[in-house]
Image (cartoon, rainbow, N blue to C red; front, top):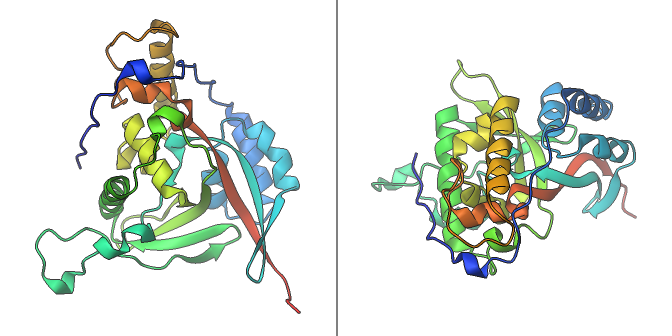
Length: 278
């Protein structure tokens, strides 16, 4: 799976200094948050996926006990909001913005997109589920979706310059594979704001494999990602505009200047309460 790197940015136009990222939270803090999610009767897989995305999980624990309410047709959602690691959330693989680009195999068209638009279904408390042929097919679908979404929706100013301003909405989503040898995996898919996250991943140089199976599941890989950017921050004076060698994993120097690309606020539904409408 390949991707085209962005054109070099004019560093003289950048307004944000490069800031150090905070350290990853302790395993104990993530375990505490995971236990709090499970008290809401979330599955172990959903609670585990949701617990590791937060920059400061200790600040999220009180919200789980006292979530915000948001009205939806027929009831309301209980949601929490906080700052998360962009590399540990995933753009929606079924972004409906791209529905008109999906060509079905029956059309016998060469080079058709490796995607479909199957419906997500409720899979538990605060959790949805989708189906995919295999992990490889899921990665191909995510890569196609990110590239197609980016090409059709370019924010101005770019995410690299301003970061993600409005909190996307992410949902714990379990992927059930048709391949019987592959166990289901659970991710945090962004169902609203997928375009913003797609641009953030692009500017951070993240692959589909990174977003799905690397950074969310591997603390060592995530720590290396943070250390690389912090090392670059230590070598670059805040006011400097000289070109320097970019750290591995970052597509362009300008991408690492945007704190919003690396961290963003996210809203996560943790439960749905139905109401009787009069």
